[in-house]
Image (cartoon, rainbow, N blue to C red; front, side, top):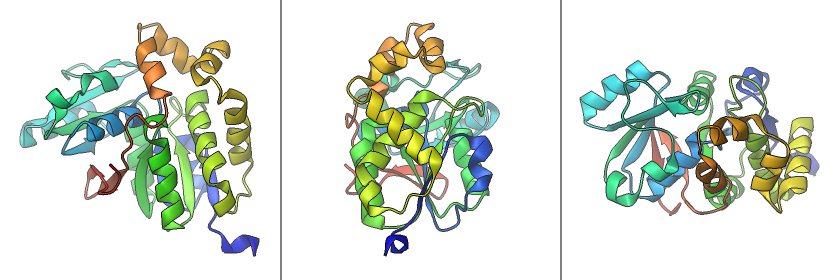
Length: 247
């Protein structure tokens, strides 16, 4: 009976994504600090859609064509040539409501395009701000899942692993999981769950260091807070939209 449940795997880095069959799977793009947290926040605050692109040049060009808000970062800072960065606090309803956000980031938007190129069945984005919406969707769809961590320039990072673990902890009874990286993710999450921010700080997580060095502790704390942007960003026809019913 065990194998009648759909499989769930965790890819700890974009460099490992090629090891997994994505064709019939829901691929969850995870870039907690900060791309997928910002995507959920922008959609929750009324953005029409988010268009993820993999280069700054493409971001600027597309933004001009569609009169969208162009935003993104490279190495944690606002990318040169763009007006807005990757902080969820930059996208309150008064600013983003009804608008299209064109976004490029160091890791997350690139990973989404890698998943597309590898034939992902469906793509959604996940972060702590939309944790429950992601879990509810995965349970409802009953399809194979690959949790794809954006990591940092292909190096495994703690926060994306923590989010993968949080998802696994909530949905594991409904999936067949024979995957050591998923077990590692859940084990780490169970150790950290009482205080995710404190855990990141205590472990001197590389991305915590990077962003706190820019004075972005507030961003980090928000991005580790469950269900503050309860939407389900689904990738369709080049855009991430808020799936009706997601919020």
